[in-house]
Image (cartoon, rainbow, N blue to C red; front, side):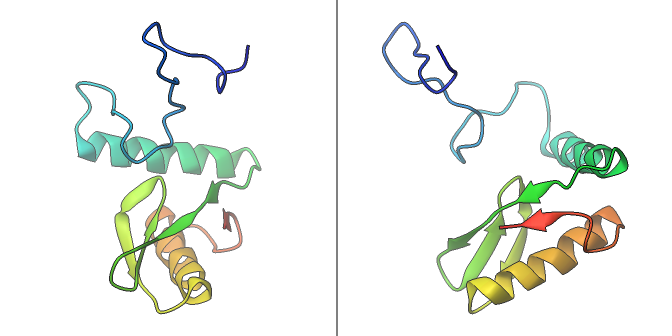
Length: 103
């Protein structure tokens, strides 16, 4: 049985942790979560992988980077949001903008 097919005893599906309303691990404050997200991305890049981030629209012509929710972007279109996200993530990680992908 795959993770997506697994269910809890009460019949509710098991979350994979990517849903915005999923519960964070207890005892980890937001600053440590941010540091862990940055460290994980840098490790992926260091071993030659290309981390992938997705952007999602939020009300008011704003975009949020899934996994880096504290980085919000103001863009009128998805293409402009992708461009802004690439610049913001490259600055955050201090890496060239072609070392990761954005969808």
